[in-house]
Amino acid sequence: MSLFNDIAGYWLDGAVRTLDSIGRGFGSQVALDPPPVTPYKVIYEGGKVSLRHYRAPNRIHVTPIVLVYALIKRPFVLDLQPGKSVIEILLKRGFDVYLIDWQPPTRADAWRGFDAYVNQDLDNAVRAVQIAEDIDQVNIIGYCFGALLSLLYTALHPEKVKNLVTLTTPYDMGSRDLAIYNLMDRIDDRGFELITKIYGNCPAWMVNSMFTAMAPMHHALDKYVGLYRNAERDGYAEMFELFERWMQSDVPLAGRIFRELTSEIFKANKLAKGEFEVGGRRVDLSQIKMPVLNVVAEYDDVVHPNSSLSLLDKIGGTDKRNLTFPTGHIGAVVSGGALKKMWPEIAGWLADRDNPPM
Amino acid sequence: MGEKNNPMLDEITKLVGVLSVELPTAAAKSLLGNGDREALRQTGWKAYDAWISLANETANGLYSNRVFGEVVGRSIGAALRVQRVVDAAASAVFGNLWPAIGLPTESAVTALRDEVKALRSEVRALGEELRNGDAEDELAAADDYAAARSAEAQNAAAAMIWNGYRPEQPRVRGSRKGGKKSVAL
Image 1 (cartoon, rainbow over the protein chains, first blue to last red):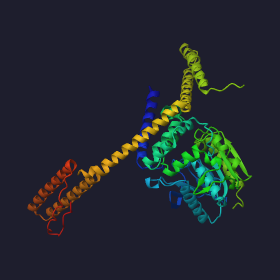
Image 2: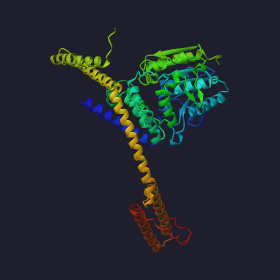
Image 3: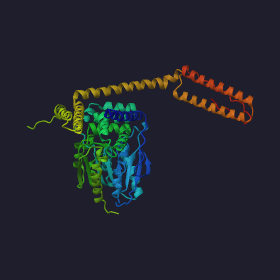
Image 4: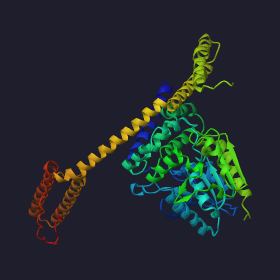
């Protein structure tokens, strides 16, 4: 029967991809990215940062955007296909874009914690943009873990940020709104420490397993059935292939930042309580006085909306807004609706605050 | 007091409804010729979707279950502890004990293979040199030499794996016509 044959074929392809990813995860290899859709130039490399510059064809705005991506997967999801690219949208709206492409940590990088990523790498990247553009301030857009890094950076270096956009930010981890959070609660701090004692970093396959555990039936069967059901839809199969490639592009998480994330941010919820410290300095969100747009994905199954909605209460400025959009965590950067409506709205919000325009 | 929502019960009700009413009705209509096959197909997918939703809800229920969480949490902890001990044991055996009892490491065997490969290519080059100079007798001698050295090296590799035998450093052959010397094993 065609239905079973087709789904079995898709499933086998997926199983091979998963095994391949697990195999890579045990070593230090990271899968190759697909060819870039939008051309860019690397303008700075240092620490664990490779800073890409995407030049707008018709630049309108003075202040460029620094896109801070998450540490746990490769950033090509932001530039997946022509017409389905966050970067393309921002460029078309007249912004130059700088993307922080985090380099995967090796075992020797296990010492890297929030201090190294925020106060060294991210700060160096912003400095590189300041020099390249001859400006004092940048716009920052952070996505997921990247939003958390952006938030910490902005609180610690507010003078360098003109406007901040946080997208699906894991800020308040006090509530256990997602079932997987309850499961992670049962792993004690010693368990997380053991992971870094054994592997140095949190291995990529473990990061992948966590995402798989969030929707086991989807990853085991439903996505292949979905491919079968949508195979006739124009471009669906190509998108599926690219998206799967991204799903398997997990990157290890440096040992120290993994421990800080799990024990201090996730378990003890220190950031929301105002007790979180980076490099010996307490992160005081009231220092964020510039305009802030906090984007929340209504159906987010990775960072529950309740974990980001309360963020603005602690922000110091008055020009702040929550933008709730009916999409999921990944949908926020790949879904047609988000790309057609949400991202132009984000670009518009930034454009309104680009003073003076070019 | 508001009624508490039970997502699992909702999903079960949905699935039972599709399986017991909608699907048989659509199948019967299709068999009697009153309905099209597409309607039956759509109802089939509806049943599938209901089943997947129920499965997802079951997984969420499991994750939220205290006992299941305890079991998983402890299993992960135990597995990590076991792995740490295994890693430590493997490191002790393969990092220290293995070379101490004279067994070669993977890198030693690889290095030996590379040396054999280099030797072969040198001998091949030498053979070419001899052939070009019409020195038939020297060619035969070189081939014999290459075969002997290759066999010796291969035996050495086997012996190294078996009991840690390490071949002696070879004597450097005297320079031939071109003054070329053999690589050191």
